Image (cartoon, rainbow, N blue to C red; front, side, top):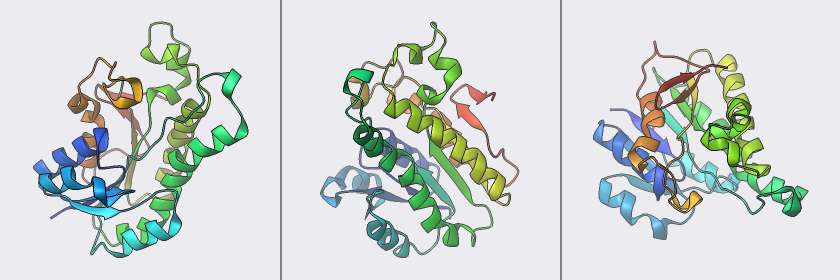
Length: 226
C-alpha cells in the first residue's frame, strides 16, 4: 500500500487530489491547518492530520504521526493580499513566500527521513503557470493578465527549488505541477478548467514509479519544456 501525505488537503485542489489518490489505492493523510475542516477528507476515507506549513512544530508532529511515507504532495498555498505594485511591500512578499516556498522546504525536510525508507519515494510540488515567465509574457496565455508580484514569484521559486531537490535526491522522483486555470476560490471560480482537470498533472506525477521522470514541470497536457 502506498502511503501519501497531501498538504492543504481540506478543500479545492488538495481535496480533489486526495480523492483521486484514494481512488488509486493510496492511503492518504490529509494535512490541514484546522482539523475542524477535515470532515470532507474524512468522508472520502483519508486520515486528517493537523499540519500548518508555516509552523515547524506542527509539521514535526504531523510527520511523527505517520507510520511511513512514499509520496509527498506539497499542495498548500496562499494567493496573498498584493495584486499590483501599488499595494506591494516586503511584508506581502514574506507572507506568500512563507507558505508557498518555505512551507515546501519545511515539510519536505521533515519528510525526508520517512521518504528515504521508501523503495519508490515521490515528491510533487504544486506550482503554477503563473510562475513561468514564458506564459507571463505571452498575450495568448491565461497567465499574461496576472499582475501581482508575490504569488507569481513564489511559484517561480517552487519550480526552481523542485529542480534543485531532484538533482540532490537522485533516488527519488521529484517533480512540479501546473494545475492550469482552474475554477477555484483563488480566482472566484472563473477558471475554465474543472477541479478534476486541475489535478490531472499532480495526480499523474504522484502515481509515477521509480522509472518515471524527475526534475520536470508538467501540466495536464504533459511536460513543459524549460
